[in-house]
Image 1 (cartoon, rainbow, N blue to C red):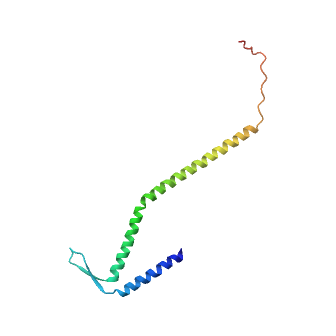
Image 2: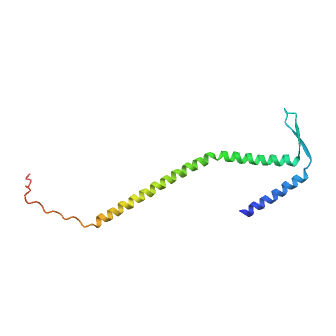
Image 3: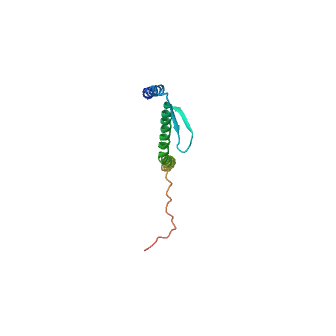
Length: 123
């Protein structure tokens, strides 16, 4: 991935330098209602416009992804909560299983013999 970045960056940088060297003539810039005019090199006008467009596009893309980032954060919070609940449920199940194992391995209580003086129920 690093090499791909260099393969793309170097030609673009060379193209920008070539464009700057080829377009050194001044261009007069003015904003209609204002009386002031500014002379700037043509390459500066074009490159600044491209950089501002790139930054504005990145800002719009970042702003557009806000809903997805918010939803992902909510889903991660929910997943973390459910994972904690699952761990707690497994711990409770393990504890109940261990308790059942100790109860089943304990000797059974002796059954008391029937009492001799209990009257029989005649129906």
